Image (cartoon, rainbow, N blue to C red):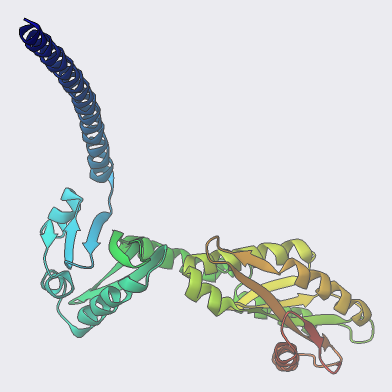
Amino acid sequence: TDYAKKNLNDGKDIYIIMAKVMAAVALLCGTIILFLMKEKKDALSMYHQMKVNDEMLRAAIGKSDALILIYDLKTRQLRCLNPECVEELSLPEIIENAPEQILQFLPEGENSKRQIQDLFASLEEIRGTQVFQLVFEDGEKRYHYQIRISALLDDENKVFQCVGLAENITEQLVMRQEIEIFRQKAGTDYLTGLYNRGKGTELITELLNNMDPETESHAFIILDLDNFKGLNDTLGHQTGDAALQDVASILQRHFRNYDIICRLAGDEFVVLINNIPEEIVQKNLEILLKKLNLSYGQEKTVQISASIGVAMAARDGKDFQTLYQKADEALYEAKKSGKQTAVICGKK
């Protein structure tokens, strides 16, 4: 009958729909299986790569003489990654509540406690990389450590973790002190290679004692760097040392080999320009000041320049002390007038 035929056709349609649904489900399942297989393959590849990277890191750490540290500011947990250094220093691999607990592994004393407290207190303010110097006393022995710390920032630009590299530089400092003693005897400044204070003063005094005031004129100059403290505070003493070396190199290239150049102390230099007419001193030093306009840093840039005070021998004096005093007064005027300038004693 027509009713039976209709029921039969409806039944066929249901089977067709069910077949289509099953085919779609099978296709979807196949796609998911293929996707999962690819994900598994990628995960395995990533896992193997991580194992390789981990082994490479362990190998690098194993060869390092420095102690590698990771500190989490939230949990206050400190991890020590170099097994050999950890064993040598009798440190555990993990130190909980590190700002307090690490003190039990260091020489006792207020000096140790203060240094550690200052170090951990400054971690939240670190940006980029910063170098810390720590000195611990154990009886008559002193140990010097240099810790280079890099900060990791979160999405809010706050420090959440720090990675540090701690090195025992005691032997290096002893060697440097021995070299410094040798160079002091040789009359050379250890950092710049210029004459040191003692040798420079000796050579200038000898030249002044033998000068002819009637036919000779010497320029005694004091050169002081502008914003050198700001450079040290912002970019660290290593950058400051590099700047002093750069300044020394510029001075050596600018002046003649028979002029006397010495690093007196810190960022203060003294130069005796041998037998130069006073009328060309100002122009000579203006050229020098342009060369000494230097910039350091990348993310944070710091500018330094120089100010110069000049005294003329024999007009302003015939001995080192008198000329130094006069040149220092001129240097004060140069600083007061806006820095990055040269002032000759007695001239505005």
